[in-house]
Image (cartoon, rainbow, N blue to C red; front, side, top):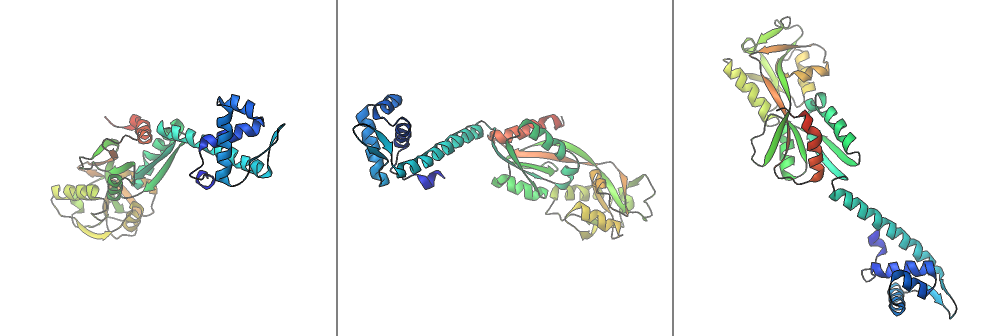
Length: 302
């Protein structure tokens, strides 16, 4: 590492002078190559040796050559020079948005719908940008986005936050989840009011407040207050609990891709849907985040 080699009193200019002199092994030629006066070169080499505490060169009236310590130190100087070069290039690429990390949060259903396509588009356009993906609930994502832990959040429902900008990526119809032996399971469509006396299995309200509240509003508009008999924190678990007959649920249609045994997915009347939203902090000037948005732009619904 640079910090392990560099003494705070050693100047990069002195290391450059040393490297050129080690290549030329002649003060006059080295001074000409560096475009400095020969006395200035000699003074800087002596000053560097004083700070290092050992001689770098043996000097005679006829020749200059590296000491054993000087030859060993030259290896480290070359390594330092290469590391600095790589660091400058990496910093330039980060500044240009070609290198760095974009941390993206997502809900589970996004992985069943838009996220795989979005990730592929992003990787094709920006292969050197690192993409860090974190599956989180919508509420946890929004908190992490506000605090700066996430650069992008892919959530259910449009957040009500003036500090965020959001774009609709996908609209997922809501469907009823019924046990396969349920009295309504043979129907193609079911009315929400026909589920009024059924125990519901839902996410906790604090975890997905947008979707949870939307389902509750739909039930109320159909004339009843849903009774939540069981809560679970993933769609896969909710579907599994429906499959063993513990209740019914309302979920995005994409959940059927989990293919859980014992569950029937039926269209709902009245029809409703939930939006999958891409969210970012308003005014985020990060080029890497901007590149992710650009990759997502063809998927954004008008």
